[in-house]
Length: 281
Length: 109
Image (cartoon, rainbow over all chains, first blue to last red; front, top):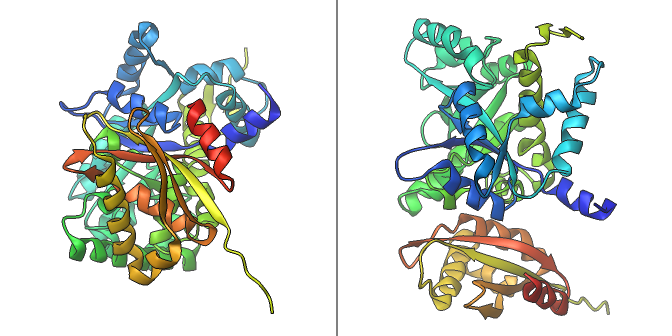
């Protein structure tokens, strides 16, 4: 593959971080569209790592081949303990991947009305999913979640809980290295013009706050149908509507999610003993 | 006196849909309406939108706009989900400043 082709592919790297499967649409429906609009990584909500591995085994004879990040980690496994170096190796693998190959990742959304219940859920699910996200409509829960090490993302719906985010919560999120995940699907599914302008207003307020406090955020489409999928570049253009310029949202559609994902894959892998220490045979 | 020349951009779009019979005229109207809803009459008049070419068989076409309005057009395309009560995705697959290159890309794809 020529250097130019690699550069073009590199520019197109993007992730859809919240695909929820239902009776109407299968994973293959989503993958078909993701293939056309060039999204190589699909994060599926609600499936465990075991279920994901089963899907990967079943895909061997189908039109699209699913790949697991754990398998890639085993093939690029080096003796270095440097996370950045490992991320770079993953990216090189991704750039040279075939167009019909797609990486599948498992994720779980936790939503509850009490801290105790969330604690119980997190203890149960953490090692069964590669990514864990929490959604809540209560401020005290969001503040607790922002400091919990088992949580990767805090989900924000521009329609419902965007107003709960304030400066104090922003600094907590920033300190504990969490990511704020902004779901853009509400922009596509607004009922009418009034609803749409309300969403834009909430989004602009939130973005202003995040910019002031330098909080890392990510965009996801959380699509309700495969045709609601948008690639990284399109999500960044939608982000412009919320007042964040195209150049400033560069990391929000791939880099942040991907580094979180790689660090979790390393932690969950059998060779990992604890953070920064792994078993080398 | 300084002469300013407006530079154009040609966006190749693919119409991705699972349903048949998505009318090209309806797509044009939808793009216009969505652009106008977002950026107003003044914005859409200065965008210089023009539907250069549409191929019903390939389900793709070329839209021309001024280079200043390119981000606005791409935002508009990302917001469109339904045309004629049918689910569609208007995917901008290629952007060029020269129409011949856009046409060449379209014929290759």
